[in-house]
Every structure is written in C-alpha cells, then in structure tokens.
Amino acid sequence: MKSSILTLTIILSLSNITMARDLSRNTARVVSNNRSIRVMNANSSSNSIATTSTTEEVEKTKEVCEQIFYDCMDKKTDELVMQNEVYFDDYNDMLTDIYAGMTNPSFKCLYKNDIKDLYSKYYYNQTGLDSSMGVKKIKTKSIEYYNFLKQNANDVATKRIATNMILPEVLTIAGIEIEPIGMNSQSLPNVTYKFTTLNPITSFNMNVEYCMNPKTNQDLDGCDKLRKNIADDYKTLPPNTITKNCQDYETFLMDKRTKAEEEARTFIIGLKTKLINNIEEYNAKIEAAKTLNLEK
Image 1 (cartoon, rainbow, N blue to C red):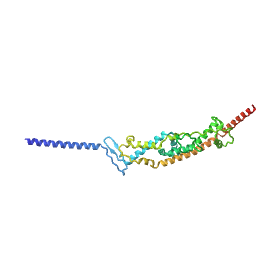
Image 2 (image 1 turned 90 degrees about the vertical axis):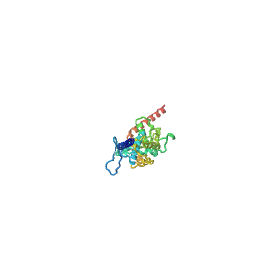
Image 3 (image 1 turned 45 degrees about the horizontal axis):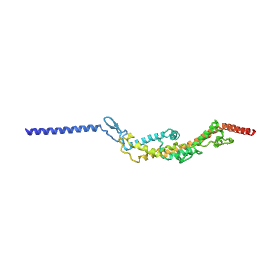
C-alpha cells in the first residue's frame, strides 16, 4: 500500500515538472515573438522591416546611426546661424547668390575661426578685430565703406548734414570739381563687433555633445556608441566640407563688395546735379556772409 502511494506521488511530481517546463517554453515563444526581428539585406530592393506585435523598426546599422548624427549637426548648425544675425543675413543671400536656390547646405564655416576675419576683411577692410582691442574705424575699399559713401552723398543731397561734410571720394565718383568752402568731411563710422560674438570652437563642441548624446538626440536610441572622430568627419563630409563652405562664403563676400562699389558709384552719379547745386548754394552763402562782414 505504501509502495503504491509512493509511486503515485512520484508520477504526480514528474507531471508537474513537465507541465512547468511546457509552460516556460510557451512563455518564451510568446516573448520571442513579441521582440523586434531585425534583418539586413543589402541586395534587397526594399528595406527589411523589424516586426513586433505593436511596432516596426528599420535596423539601425552603423551607417544609419552616423547619418542620424550628421542630420542632427545640420539642424543644430541651422539653429546656430539663426542665433547670429550678421551671419544669418549673409547665409540667406548665399543660398540665392551662390547656390542659386538649388541646394541649401549648412553653414559649416561657422565652425572655423577664419570666419570672423573673412567677415571683417570684406565688411571693414580690417582683420584680427576684437572688441577688447578698442573701437576701430572702417577702412576704404570695404562693403561698409561703399555703403557709407552712399549714405553720405544722400545726406548731403537732402541736406540732412552740412554740405561741407561731403566725402572727397563722393566728389571724385560724381566728377564734381568744386568743393564746399571749409570742407570738413564726415568721419568714417566705427566698426560694429556683433560678428565677434560667435565662438566657433565652443559652438561646435556644444552641438557635437548634443548630437552624440542619446538623451538629447533621441533618434540615436538603439544605436551603438558613435566613434570619436565622427565629429571631425562632419567637417570634411563631401560635398559641403567646411573648407569648401568657407571658400563659398569668401566668394560671396568678394562679390558683395564688388556690388557695393558698383551700387555706390551708380547711386552717387545719380545725385550729381543735386550735389553741385547744394555746394554752389552753400559756397554762395559763405561768400555772401564774408562780404557782409567786410562791409560792416
């Protein structure tokens, strides 16, 4: 009797163990079926899809993850240019003048220290400018100088400033041979240092840190850690390398300076008659005042 009870107990125990194993296997199958199944097939014309019970994912290969980083850097670069008004205006014009609206490459030149010297060279005909050095005057043959010539000629023509404050080059461009008596030309304006507020190295490092961190760049979720030199590779990624982008920017600035000179010349020549009349009127008043003083 005891033997029969013992046999029955063993059979029931084995049955329970078998049932538990079966249950465990079935559970594992369910979990396995619910996991993402990622398949990569380079020869397939369609992307392999990772299927789950609720979501679908494309496998994040090394190449995909690196492209996510590059895209993020482009986005952060666009944000950076919008934060710097002086460069933002130039970049917008570059899209039309240099790229003809066909492409809109990111302004990678913002990450090169040379960009500040490029700006100051063509806008003010000065280099190595920094606000800590004190105030500097713009120099001739620069974009801002030609803009100032236009402003000076217009202000004299409309009598917003005294006629004797006309600049000698305005007279030369207009082909005017007479000068105001006691000519005391308007002084050249100071350089504005807004362009120096950009810190290329710091800005680049901050954007790299943002784009390499899955916590801030959440598109990297599921990617392995990116290689360290990918940040430098972004600068040299063709076709819009940082060197090429800075060359494009300098080409744009050279063209802008040429246009500024041509526009100033055309504008001033158009004011020739008004300028001559104002100078003659001004000189006549001075001569009349002298005559009155002599007569007294």
